[in-house]
Image 1 (cartoon, rainbow, N blue to C red):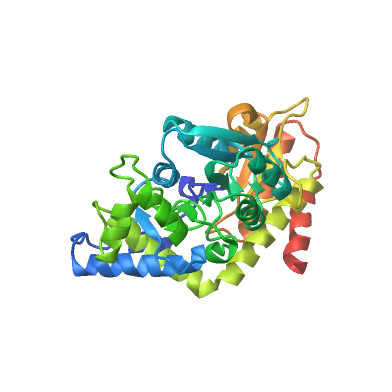
Image 2 (image 1 turned 90 degrees about the vertical axis):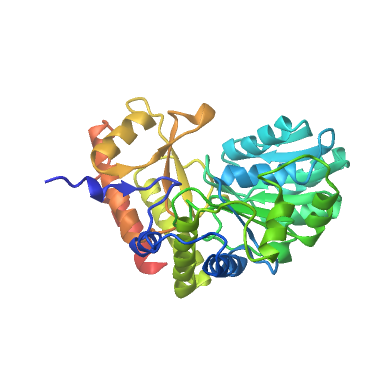
Length: 384
């Protein structure tokens, strides 16, 4: 008998899709200009407001999260203008690469991977670059498991610059608080395949009135990623181009699930999963990449570079046990592994991963006490 369908996917995206979301995506196809489709667009955009923490209408793009990142760049800054990008990992680096690709003068604020950005450091950097039209940073840096203090970073930008505040929330929105309007964030983007519990293929962007003014004045040519077209069509209860309708049905169901659980409980669950994971890793004597203060509730990065083992070997052992975790990116490849714990994930999922990790470590030659990681996580589960 094959148990391949019981594979435990614990990477930081794509994440597992709930059965009721998959069922919703199997609804019969409809016309994308029909009244039924318009109702679907409006329902999804309205419910996304709670996830973003905004009164504006989030825009729905049929693309990966990177499509929304690129849209945030090309719509706000023109070639020859200046932009600041805070780089705390691979996805901050991706923002920087997009900025460079469009001929924008890039000012990189590079931090050691595994460390969050300090708002005072950003303030000092901004004083050196007063002409910046936008500041880009990641909320959760997926490659390292860092959660940047976006509220404080946004405040720092507002106090020391006239630049727009633009944040990548792809790997955390729906799992952590976001109060975009209150925090002074001008554009926040996210994607479907992370905490929102959907397959890849949808991206979302919420835009402040302040940002719209700059977008309206930006002469940079753009077509599919022109956010003005998305705003204009959403006002008409439609989209400028054919949307991923099946994914939108799934999105409506996923947002209903978040609404039923209640966002405060969703956020508390993710904090508990983070604490369980980190407690288990520490009990096994492994080294975490981030401090407790900087750690994300959605992904945990663990060093895997001891003398007798390395991260990729461990990942292969875990896969043989039916558990998938992610590897490192860029210079961290082979040096870390990453455990995703966002979206459709509960406490028993974490206990399963830690149990498998203990077995994989022993098979890799790392002497750990069976049950020690699981026990530490169970203690958290019982008392947090």
